[in-house]
Image (cartoon, rainbow over all chains, first blue to last red; front, side):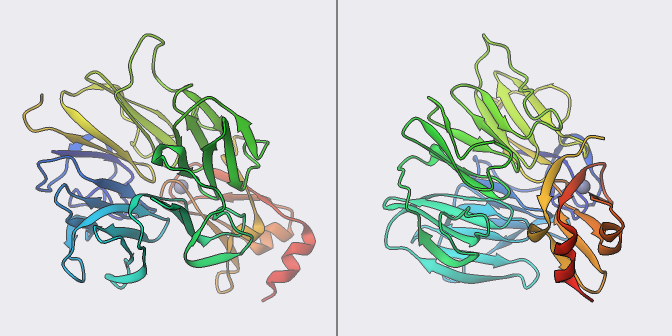
Length: 291
Length: 68
Ligand SMILES: [Zn+2]
């Protein structure tokens, strides 16, 4: 079962209307297993279910979108006004939301295992390294070009998808005991910050070093106030545009900027298997049998 | 005043019809400020759908690039 709350001005929660929600609300979509991906852009949400079917919100509902060659989707990311899907043959498609159609961007010979987007740039990790495209005005695609149309290889190499993340106008990469900030590093005061962390998450303007449970960057709206005690274990955690969700045991908690209802009070929910956050939107996947 | 973020004017989108600059807000709507307001010394863009505000970083000369 999928639950949602938060900003819903364009029906991006998939609840059949355009009213914001400030409590976890059941979404009418038939998925029994944890989604492969659930990502949100400015006014849309993209879900890839466990069997590789993609759904995108339209007219306030999740609507399935078929692969042009009937292949299965495996990964998705969302920019501000668009989204990218990767199929099991490692072809990358953009989904043009206003035209409601897929556009082939590239086909990689290497195997792609992660894709993430900022506001207007996208980075993917394949078994031969990182590729980036989109707006690169600040250098967020690892290249000194204003805009990159199709995926181009980064100079930096990493192998672990936990080691990179995209903010609004930057990309962060964990390498050699340092967090490297490519693109706009103004919010961090440096291009590289030493850390022992091995995984990183990013909101639009702040970054979470997971092992240290330390936030960096913008703290204008409680982004640093992760609601966890020292002796508690974090089972699931994610960041949205300017908020975060975490699950510790059966406790679902949120922090950061929650003006649109995307940060409900701590709630006890059994069987949460996935947490996802978009632009002031929050989603939970909960196992039916609540185990 | 708690400004959420600072954004350089080159990173904003200028709409010549509305004569205003726009930039995505984390709520899903967009921050907006009229070029005339920037000329008058304003440097804050607001969002019509939430309380967040951004500071626009620019020099007076920058505005010359966006003539009607
Ligand atoms: Zn807003």
